[in-house]
Image (cartoon, rainbow, N blue to C red):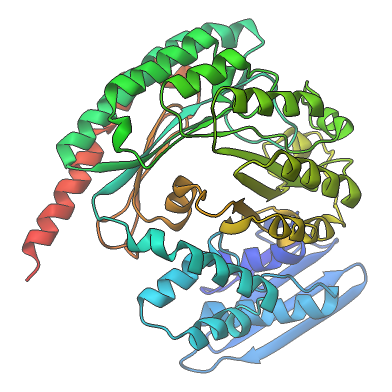
Length: 486
């Protein structure tokens, strides 16, 4: 399937409206002589959409009202045609954005009534009532977090781009620590990361920011040796005021590189929340995705974490993994619930172009993924509450990822980064610092990027440090604009 767009209003939204129905469709410049395609054309006063599948042609034409949003009118016409012709009814309707909950927050901030918000979801976006009610429930649960936000808050993220093996669904910039070339990079990387974190602390102090949460992610942070992990954790403890943090998360995701000593180190140096991420409790599915551990290893790692004193643990599961079934996913849910972690995050598999699952042409359409997510009612029955939600392009059946937590155990960092409440200062290879204008969540977000690959990060580290000046410049501009306001 190819997507062909014509006219000023036929852009990003029309392209991704087509992909709601044909996820693997490629954008084309010219109409193909053979093969299937979607055509969307925006004229000055009318819109035209056409679908060719096999020997079948179907189309719609509509005159656009003078005051209509041209982009929305075209997408609505295209959505109606594709829904009728494919028989599909996307649960999130026409919504192509990744942050449905933020739409509710933003509408409330602008003074919209609850009835107007409901109409926005059910009418404008053609969202299902079930998904709207889920988004609204999460928005309500996040309200106290948003209300407590200070304009000069921020969070810090440190990335470890190394893993013991590469999972088939993963598209992150991550090197496997088993090969000699990568092993030679790890220690220089940790040394440079510590230096960058020192620079971030200096920047925070200069700008008058308050760090609310700290998050070490990956890759897999515990793929570092115990000595390297202790070096990093000790440096953070000596550089930042951990007692002032509301939350300090470290991903200890995989049992094939997380042991009792590393769990002890995480606890010793102040981590208040960790992740141990099974993705599935099926040994066969674990092998399918390239993991070199068993489900029992996950259980053993979890128990070692409890023994080390960790009392706030997250576990990730993924619906739609190769070879999984509805019953298998339900078993994984039951196993995770039986361990009683404080958080369980349920992701829907996303097919990303850089992942082995797609590159090696082993991707498949998992028809049962919606039925898998339907089993998450077991989480509610066990006392978990949905507290954050996001969507991604390429997610199976246009579904979502949801974080569930026991009451009072929601991950603040997840809410902060997804709802873009305050700035996130990012360290490490592939890091993306997101700068939010103080007090203006609706304002334009500025970004400062680190180099993507570990080798480049190490070799061009002086440039990384120089870019930190961009954070100070941003807050100086914000302060100047505030002072100039009447």
